[in-house]
Amino acid sequence: MALVPACTPSSETAQVPTAAPSLPEPPPPPEHGLPMVEFGSTWTPARAVAGDLGALQDALGGRGPATAWVDARLGHGAATRRSLSQLAPERAWAVETQAWQDVVEGMPALRRQPDTASPLYPAGGVSAKEAVTQTTLVLGEAHVDLRAWRALPVAASGSCQPAFDALALAQEQSLAYLEPFLDHADTVLRLRFRAELAGVIDSMRVDVTAFESPIAEQGASSDQEQTHACGHALYERVEAAQACLRGDACAIGPRMVLRGGVAVAMAAPPWSPDDCRDRVPLRVEAQLQEIATRAAVETVSQLEPRWVTLADRLGAMGVVYEALDDVCSPRRRRFAEEDLADARVRLSRVERALGSDVLDESGRWDVETGRVFLPGTGPVRTLATFVPAKGGASQQAVAEAKGVRRFLLSRSLCRSGFSERPLAVAVFEPGQAEASFAGFLYEETFACADLPLPL
Image 1 (cartoon, rainbow, N blue to C red):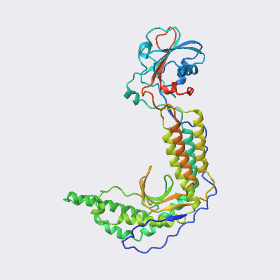
Image 2: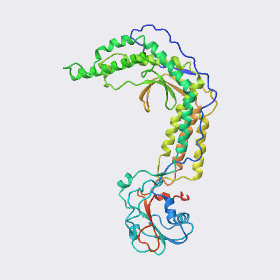
Image 3: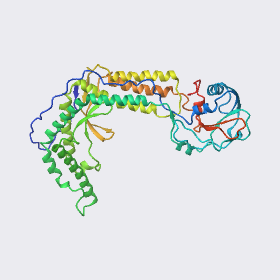
Image 4: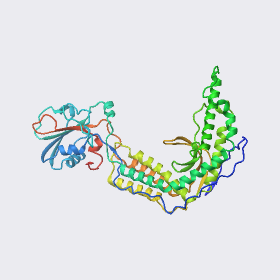
């Protein structure tokens, strides 16, 4: 693998010569790709729902004539009649255009019944203005307070959880597979970092001794306090470096990180005033970074390329998760079954790319500093980043995952053009003034292009 170094200023602090550290033997080369788990064909991007369509179907069960009073925006055309026939196929439907407020008193309460898979609402307080002589369904615009409606928990139908579970298990198994390599790389990085750090730590401590106290001397001016804060931040950094030499843990040292790929990084310095370089012109942070960078350069140049390829794939899983997480967040939309099937096939190609046994892929290490955020760790400073070969498995997987996201976003139907307010729905039985069922539905659930009802 090629190594592309970046120029870094040399250290000016006197350095005590140190012996080269004794390094452990690396693990044997890998024999196969990542242990992937099938994403399967049961995952579906979540669709935001306002109510329980299945419960409405149950409320309309039975045979015989039925009347539907629907809002003018739905109309009584072919789409409405098709949805009604799917909702209650044993009914003979008569459809009339009526506004909700003309035929119904009240509105379902914005209070969902607990412990139900889909949103259900109490039917109390919803009644017909006139007695009905046959089963009657009323669908009309819900005149609800939008702020109160938005405050309700988001409810959804469908889930990508099967795909997320498969990806999580693959990550867990892959991390176990790569653990010997990652532990070896971290150990070598730590040993090399410590070996060079030991030769300069004493002179670094001398430079920052005056800033040991966390607060400036009494009577110091505001400007002097700022200068002391800068110096104390450097003092704490040197203390962390000293701790690195005392025990096995080395929080400040370089280590392998998996974030969209694989890189060598070190903990970013803690907060300090912005103008610290001018106030305290010490090269503590620059020295630490130079030592860590040299340890990174020496280490990555000797790592087994096939392990690096697999580590890069494992890091790419995070990008796959982010792409899925975005497209799977609940939205008001519908999908055709053939488009969902296509998306599942596309996602299976991600699985195959990451699990490929072809490991002899070229790539290079770019030796330059950057900054990334690691969940659970915070900001870290990258020192060397692996750049996979063009068309490599990790790049294929990332491209396919982003392609799945773009495809599903582009193929989602009925995602706009509807009122933010849902439809109110109520069912009345002959001779009964009170509704036997009441709730809400989003308009695209009831009628969306030529899609069947999502029952």
